[in-house]
Structures are given as C-alpha cells and as structure tokens.
Image 1 (spheres, rainbow, N blue to C red):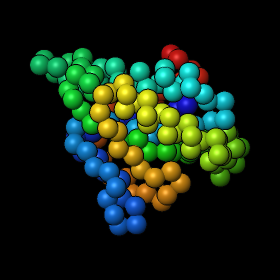
Image 2 (cartoon, rainbow, N blue to C red):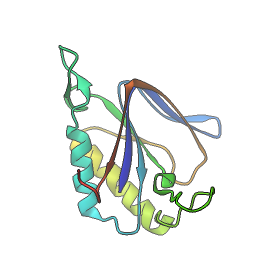
Image 3 (cartoon, rainbow, N blue to C red):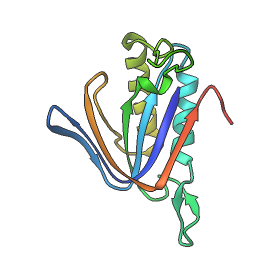
Image 4 (cartoon, rainbow, N blue to C red):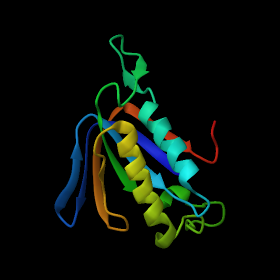
Length: 150
C-alpha cells in the first residue's frame, strides 16, 4: 500500500461537476493498492498517517499531527501510484490491484483512518474520473509505502 500525502490548506474532489468532498486544513491522501496488501498494511499505514507530525507548532517547527490540529482528510484511490515506467514510455499498471481486491481494501483503509482520527474522512469515488483540487501547504508532500518502512 502506497500513499502520497499532501498537507493542504484546502482540498476538494469533484465528479461530473458535483463537489463530493471538501476540506480545509489537513491531508489530501492519494492511496495506491497492490494485490499483496492486507489489513496489517492498513493498520500500520493508517496509524502512521494519523500520527505523522508535519504541521507547524507555535515555533513553526513541523511537530504536530493531523490529530493535534484537529485537521480533516480526503482519501482518493490512485492506482497510478504503482505505475511501472522502466520499459518504454507508456506506464504499466500491472502491479496495481484490480477492483475486486482494491475496493474492499480501500474501504477498510478509510474506515481504519476514521477510527484512528476519531472523525469522518471524506473520499472520492473508486474508479471515477475525478477532478482533485488542492492548495498544498508548504509545499509538503510525502510518500509512504507500507512495503518499504523506512
């Protein structure tokens, strides 16, 4: 499971002209899932995100978590995070899990993240053509892979 986290001052998701998610300060999370992902990945990654200290404290030091600031979150499925670009110029998405595997894991991740944050997490729609807008704060963008816990 791989996430690209963007610290935002504002974020939204629009599908077919309708805004389905909208937040102010918090995370816009793009989530990519592979077939090998499981509930251990979900629990580890959700906990990591909930406690990741990338918001400024009173001295401007990134020392506060999304929970510390009572921030909000949007999670969007993003199979292209697992693009393979080694050969040729057209990315391959063979590593990305198919919907029958990915959808239940995506929903489980959102549920776990809501539990860890203690609040509702907004989402896009799995498989939809989404327009994702954000104002990246910093900019701060972090990639975390549950299979490579560095």
